[in-house]
Amino acid sequence: MLRQVIALGLLTVDHENYSSLKLTEEAKPVLRGEQKIQLRQYQKPVKPKRSSSSSKSNYVETDLSTEEQTIFDKLRWWRVETARKHNVPAYVIFHDATMREIAKAKPSSLDDLRGVTGVGEKKLETYGAEIISLIREISG
Image (cartoon, rainbow, N blue to C red; front, side, top):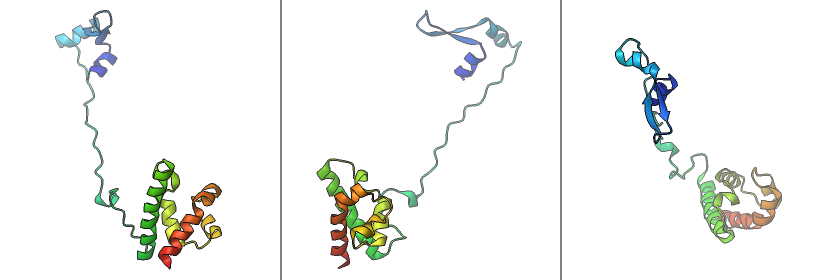
């Protein structure tokens, strides 16, 4: 409300007196009731509620089969350990979306892994052999 009154020129900031507020000459008719002003009503912003389905603690993906979910979970643990070794955040290694795609594709070679979105040449070179080995270990 103060901002609106200042914008209307009814109030000013007196910088010489410790930035106190000071009524202007334009405020006198308003104070006497000779002039009416209309101010916007403040409405507190409403935060949208998060649904339980969008909860970050919900790691089970419905679009993955049981075997794919097992691969995805193993990849997540591998990513955490790899990130600790390299002292980087886990998402730098691979994003969840990339690991889901790897779990679905179940690549059996570096060429297969190369076709997965999010796996570039550098990551293929750095992590490819470990990922292929991990998938072979799980898939049997």
